[in-house]
Length: 222
Image 1 (cartoon, rainbow, N blue to C red):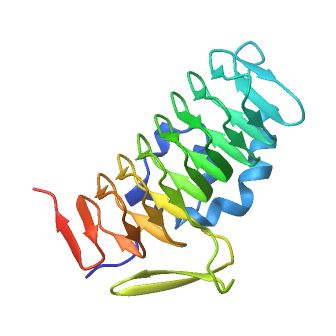
Image 2 (image 1 turned 30 degrees about the vertical axis):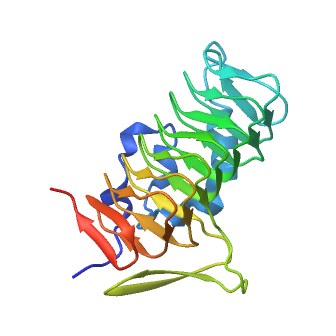
């Protein structure tokens, strides 16, 4: 029986500064409406010897690398050792984890990147959660709004949840690899340690430890 995985089945909450955000969340998308307020709450408590406050509600670790051409809008936290590269565009309500990479021409909006996440080239991540050490290949994007603008449902073969959200991108479990130029459709959930082939269109739930080759060709890793 394949149902929709809970937060604890997807994400290692010891690998993010945002662990408290997920308190009492059964599913990861439950936290999306709380990211903005959470950033402001914990940002005020961050050690000023370790984090600089820049602009309104923006906290950046002193050892993070920020390209001068990057745009960072608040509220936002960029954690220790993260790298924000040339022409990255952070629109706000974003948490970038320790050692994470946000690369050239990437755009973030209302999302949490756990520690070690890499979105290094031409990626869009909106209304999404990316688990520990997940990686999106060049040009891979999250699509966070349906074409007919109706609320997003998350669908597994044996369960469907109506989220009531008009905007919901993707949830990537820890150590997920998404191939280049793939599109993750609204409400996509990819289980831990799964791989997605390049040029894929992914919808629904991909089980943990799988290789997504096509919608009708998902193989278990051996």
